Amino acid sequence: MLFALASSFVTLFVVLDPVGVAVIAGSLTRGMSAEPRRSIAWRATAVAAILMLVFAFAGAALLQALGISLPALRIAGGILLFLLSIDMVFARPSGIRSPTGPEQAEASQRHDIAVFPLAFPLLSGPGALTSIVLLMERAATPADAALVIAALAAVLALALLGLLYADRVTRLMGVTGANVVSRVLGIILAALAAQFVLDGLAQGWPRS
Image (cartoon, rainbow, N blue to C red; front, side, top):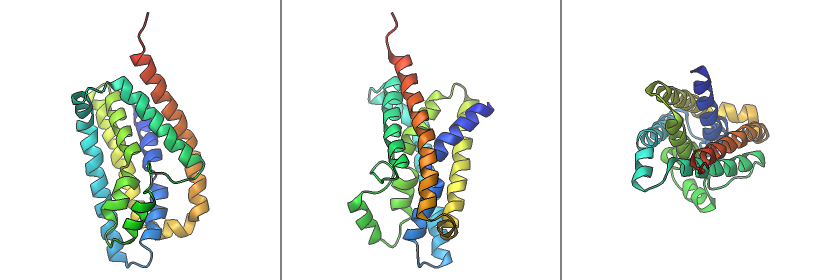
């Protein structure tokens, strides 16, 4: 049980990347007073939590309605997470985890950045949504599913703390420090992604 909780926590922590999001939020909210920063942090976390919970409980049913098998989801999700891990290891932004160029330009013109880009795609992007569906699908019992939700709640709580103290995190770590942490987490995510692909192949490959 503890292993399942730790595995879910590590996966979600790596994909949501509270440290990296805090650094980005610090740059986006530079110059704001404390009250708007707190409001943005709470609303961004709340929106991300709603998106993640919707996919946690309804994602598998949606895929089934679309005729997508769970082994196919595991393989596709593993490949997507592996691409994300490559971006993390080489510290290069992509549309998987961070806004694209046009999206960044749009975000710079918005006064409210809580929903976009903080809640989506930074916190609950494609990689995070895929991960929560895979983790819930892998949960064999209601207790295992509860552990996944508990791990999600813990990671989102850390993300909230990072957003609330984004200016301090930015000063403490800086861009270089955040990239170092991102590279280490990217290596872990690459291994987790490979495991998802192997599980999908083992489940979907026809046995003779």
